Structures are given as structure tokens and as C-alpha cells.
Image (cartoon, rainbow, N blue to C red; front, side):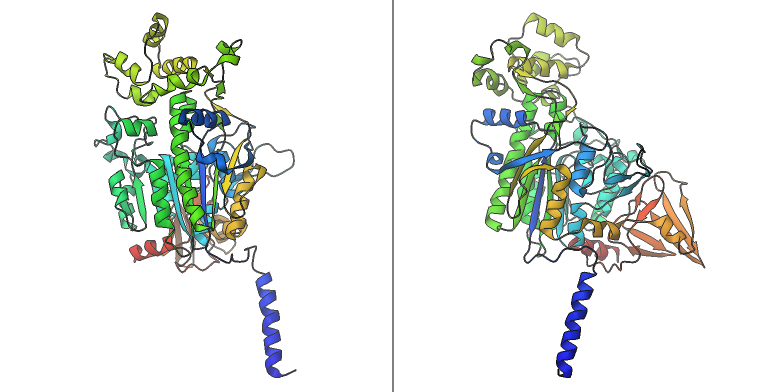
Length: 565
């Protein structure tokens, strides 16, 4: 054998053995691939059926039905949104209220976890791969479901921490509600659109406790910041951060009737796809129709129909792109049921055989606004109550019904109950329900059959050629343990509880890792990282110092680094 052939053979052997030792990263996929992962929060199958009857035609979702999904969490057979979204984003089960963290148990019989640790999401894995990534929601973008794809906190109510991690994650696109957690409390006294009469907002959020102005920081990081539908239309390139409400965005039927300057979910989805699809490495887009769940908690069938149909239009936008593209996987699913909606109630025990469509849909069609939207028009002295009730589609009320309304501590609940009864609909709870839910999908390698919610992240990761385990190892190292093992004096600076910092000192060198940021300080030098520092209450998880970061992992990091120089 010639010397040349010997060298070639040795090179081949070395290449094969070296590639086989690379940790768990799947072989690169052959072509650019995209994923659009869509969640209609809190949507039971009956809600989808009701929306179809209301529309009078098939839904876009109907052609995509491929199976079902089991939704239970570590805590309960009836999950909450945080645990469900964490499962779908990471492929790991977790406890109720926990976002992007999973429990570690020590001992077979132990019921309480020893600690919580962060695990990588499919969005983070896609970003590590160099893909463009985006978040869209009609709730505050810091709410549990979008939060679980983009942050890691011990409790879903930690909106300030979630917001800070999202800002420093290097996301290419963010569209939704949630200005509140971006603005310091001392600036929150200024007049915001969400605080005026006539704006249908469910859950106000009143500014950051730590005093940081993340709203201003967005422009420093290179984002084009938009706040209205028309501003969003004019956006031509990434990165963009659109915040269209202080807290949640309006229900779709309310948005249209009240002529609010907000984009629809379909418009946000279409715009996101048009921007993200320009990336040569492909994209991962998360879209949530957040407020089916919110209206279902109120037992408001008008709101539920409004939001299912708004979500369905967004699905139509995703499918239109996916059919043309050919390399896009679309998954649409709900995280759990809410409200326990039924066709038929106690009043139809003996008459269910004669319940015509008009008896169910007719009352709903009379409503011009959701119950939340209608009551947003109520004067302080309630002098226009009769007109407000009509906006919700309730006219010709009986004396008993007016009595219920007049004496109700929460008018909203009574109006929704009257509407449900008129439409021959029942509700079993104001909370969540634990049934299996429908799975919808389109595109190459689409999942089918009855799956567990953790399987969805695994299907996405496989399609994109990702290893979530590898991404976790890169993004989340126990910083306290890491530096102690190397002889550093390590402490947690908790002098400012809202801005905890891990400090590691040795031989005149000091490292400072602030929680929720994508950088650390080495003495006086600011150093960028591929992910954020996560404080779990016991330790600070940091991106692995053993993995070199040159700012080329994703398109998102590019604009972050440019702005920091």
C-alpha cells in the first residue's frame, strides 16, 4: 500500500472514531428545516366542536387531526400550564407551577424533590443550532406557556425573572402582550392604554420590582420595538419585539368590535413566518392562542369560540406556508382542558334529542363582545348596565335574572352562566380538566397516534437534528459546584434580592454571574455567553465555561454582540 493510501485510511479511521465520540448530537439534517409549534391553551375537544358549529364550516385544524396527547404532570393527573408547557418544550415532566426546571429526587420513596435543575427547551436547542427563533402569544409573553419555552424559574408567577431571561435570551422575534414586566414600577404611574376604561384586560401587571428598565434595554440590544398593528406591518427585518398590551391582548371578537390597534393572532403568525423564514439555517416558531383558557376559566362560551377561531386562522397561515415550503413541521395541540364544557346540561336531561343547532349557536351569535369585553364598557355607576348586558347578547332578561345580576359580587360569572344556560351548554369547573386532548400535525415526520406530551419535544428535536441533552450540558452547569471544584471561593451575593449574583474568587481573579443575564464579569471585563444564568433558589446554573463561545451559535447572538461592543 502506498504512503498516500495509508494516510487516507488513517484519516478515515480517525474521522469515524472522532465523530462517534461527539456527545449525542444527531447527524445534521440534509436541508433547511422549520418547526411551527402551536398551542391553544386550555381547549377541550368540545370547545373545538362548538367553534366549528359557530363558524358553520370546517376548521383548518380538521384536516390536521392525527392523534391525541396525554397531559398529566408530576404533581397531578390534571396539569397546569407551566408543567404541561415544560413537558412539551423539554421532553421532561415537572411539578405544577414550575417553568423550565425539572425535579431531581434522591431515593425511591421520596415524594419531595431534593432540588430543581434547568433543562434545555427545543427553542434553546434550535437557537444553539443557529436557527432563528420566535415567540408569539396573546397573553403576556411572560405567561406560563411561552415562558416554559424561553425561561427557567421556580414559579410561574415570577414574571420579572421570566421577562429578564427572555430579553437576554437573544430571541429573534417576540410578539404578544406583557409590557408590565419590562418597565420599572416607579415609571408605571404613567398612563398606559391598558389602564383606561373600555380596554378589555383580564389580569393587569404593574411593573418590575427591581427597578430595571428592560423596555429601554430592548433597543440597546438591537430590537426594533413596535406597539401597534400598523407598526408591525411595517417591520422588514429581524430582530423585532412587539408588545401590544400592558398585560394580555384583547379577545379577538373584542379587538375587532372595539377597533383596538392590536394585530390578530393570525397576523402575528403570518408576519413571524415571513421574517423568520429568511434565515438560511431555518427557524423555530412558538405560537400560543392563550385566551381560550382564560375565557374557559370564566365559563364564557363566547370568548372560547372567539379564541378557538382566532387560533384556527393562525393555523391556516402556518399550513399555507408549510405546504409551499415542504420542509416545515407544524404541530398544533392544547396543553390541557379547562372548564369542562359540555353540549347539553341539566336542562336537557329529557330534551337532548331535540336540541337544534340554532338553540346552541343562536344565543352566542347575538353577542358582540365577550363577557370581559362587554363589562369593560360599564360605567362606574353602572348606569349603562342594560346596554352592556346587550353587548354580551343577553336581552329579554327575566326578573329573576336581573335580580341575580344586581346582587352579584362578580357580575361576570352571572352573565356567563346565563349565556351558557341559554345556549344549552354546561360547565363542570372553573379550573382545568385532565382528559386526553387532540393532536394536530402537518409536514415531514409529523407525529401521529396517542402520545404523551413529553414526546412532542422529542419528535421536534429529532426532526431538527437536535440533542436536548447536549444543549442542557452546554447551557446549564451548576456554577457553585464548578468553581468550588477548581479551588475558587464561591458565594451568592443576596444583598439585592431582586438581582442575585454568584461570585467566584481566586488569585486576584473575580467572576460575577448576575442571574437572568447572558453575560458574566471577569474582573472588569464583560463576557458574553450563549445562554442566561439561572438561579434556582439554591445555586446558580451557568453556561458551561468549558464550551468556547465565539458569538456564532445563532443569528440572535450576532446582534447582541454587535450592540455590546
